[in-house]
Image 1: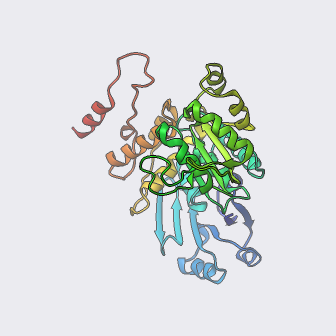
Image 2 (image 1 turned 90 degrees about the vertical axis):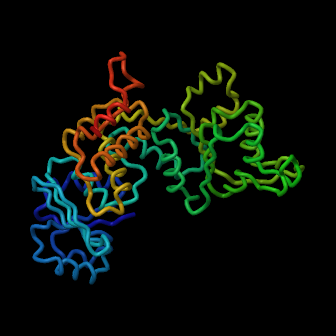
Image 3 (image 1 turned 60 degrees about the horizontal axis):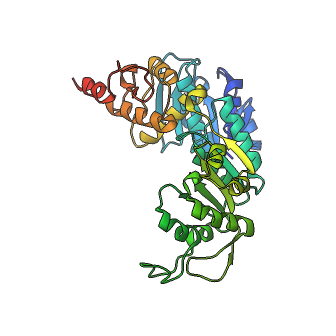
Length: 381
């Protein structure tokens, strides 16, 4: 857990900043002076740039207290800027107090490598549920539309469980040919089928003592569902071509983007397997239903793709509004496409609304729309 200390002087909206950092699972201490730091194990120090006499002064304090990063903040400006010095150990961030993008950029430097971003109440509720179930060992079934972060939730559950130091293995049931899936899941003995020149222990045994993610499990053929049910019930696998059962200790997380009740009714998914998996159901929701997540996720994407670049692009207000007002039928995957496109068109400089080119073909109600390819061609003219 990141421990952040914030010197309270000259920082606008301090309570909101503290709240948002705590939602990102940071331990936050608000201090009155530098003397308070002596009693804290701080990894990141946040100080208003207005009260710092010189960089050397704050760097000296940080070195003496073994603080890894200092962020000098000015959130009472009309401008946006980021300067990274000393190998990112000193970061200077300037933005306007009412600028959501600027705030999210600041938060992203305070708490890095956040996989599960929570800007909305819906995501925060989902995160709390995931953390609660992570402390147990029960099977979790995550249902939601494509691109809504089901695998992110699965990873979060593993990372917050007692199995966190053990393997996390994911297998996409839709991406493996039916005739190969059994051998890949349960393993196989040497010579058990054509091409099996060596034995393989399989995915279940590779995930032993850890977590196994069965992604898009609704795509699993019925013939294999019965064998999977037996493995989940008995906690034993029998490799293809083998005669000996091998005990396993695996926590199962499964995902699907389908209505499983309908799949069961239509005899496309075994009812007994469904109830075996559906111990603790969790649902992810469309990105358009959690608008407050859009800018935090956008910041994370821009930061990832501009990590090795000198400048950090600013997302202008009109561009922010364009992202928030779009109906994201492709969810986070579509959003990342739009952000990558914007970075190319803006040459990684400031992103304006005309750099935000979205594909309306999947959700438009009439044919009077401009194709995405034509929009991009127009940008080059």
